[in-house]
Image (cartoon, rainbow, N blue to C red; front, side, top):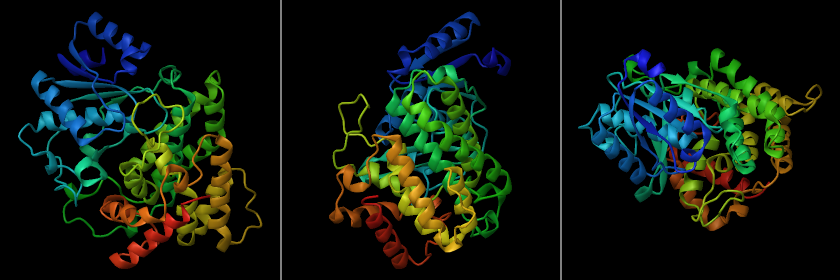
Length: 407
C-alpha cells in the first residue's frame, strides 16, 4: 500500500540469501503481489559488502529500471539498496564520484533519489534512518562509504517481529554497533567546533558533531543498550529486550546520523578490512569475518579513555548508564572509569574478543592499521582530542592501537 500511495509501479526488492527465506520476505512478496505492484527480488547482497558486490547490485538495478526500492535485511542490505538507488538515479556517474574523499571525489547528491523503504531485520546499524552506506574498497584495503543526507530512506518500518530470527551472536554484535553509535555521537566534538565551515549548505557534511537534538537520541539509546543488550543476546525468548534493542538501534541512528561517529568507527574499518583470518563464533560463513559491531567495540575501552579529557562530564554520564556510581568520581578519572565499565560490559556479554590480539593482530600490524585509519577523515574530524597535525595524529592512533591490543 505504501508503494501504491507513492505512485511506484516497479519495485526492486533488495535482500540477502538468508533473509530471503524468512517470514519478513514472505510477507513482502504476498503484499506486493496482492496490491498488484510489479517487483523483482535481488538477493545477492553480501554481508559486510565489498565494492565488487555493490557494483554487481548496481548493474542488476540499472538493468531492471525500478522507480522505487525496498530493502529487507540488516545494515548490509539497506546500505546496498541505498547505493543501488543512487547509481540508478545517476546512471552515468563514475563509481568514485560519490565515494567519500580522499578515496573518492565525495560529490554532493544534487537531486532526489527514488523512494526507498527500509525494513531492518537486525537491531544494530540504524541504517533505516541514516544517509550513510559503508563497504570495503578491496584494492585499497580500506572500508569507506558514501555519506549524504540524500541517501536517507523515505520510510523505515521497524517491527521487532522481524528481528526475532537473529541468532544470539548477531544480536550481540549488531547491538555493539548501537553501543558505539550512541557513545561516539554523544562524545563527538560539538557542532559549533566543526571546521572548515562549508561555503554552501549543499556541502555541509551529513555528520555535524554533537548537538542538543542528537544528544537526546544518543543518550537514550546508550541507556537502553546497557540495560537490554545482555538480555537480548542471552535469551532468544526475551521479546521485550529485543524490542527495546530495535528501538535503541533506530534512536541511535537518528543520533549519530546527524552528529556522527568518530574513533571506534574510524579504527574499525582497517580492523575488518585487514582481518588476519578471524572468524567470529556464531556466524555461519565459510570466510573469515569480524562482524562490524565486534570491530567497533574491540577498541572502545581504549578510545573512551583517550577522549575523556575533552569532556569528562559527558564520559561520566556515559559511565552512569552502565550503573556506575559517579557521585564521588574525580573528573580526571572519567576515562579510566568509563573504560573499566565498558570492559566489564563486553566481558559479561560473552564471546567477545578481549582486544586486537584475540582477533589475531600483533604489534607488527599497527603501522598498516594506522595507515588504514588516516584516510577516514569524515569521522576522524569529529574525534575529540585528535591532532590536526598528521605526524602527531599518527602517533596518537599508534598509541590507541597499542592500548587496544588487550583489555
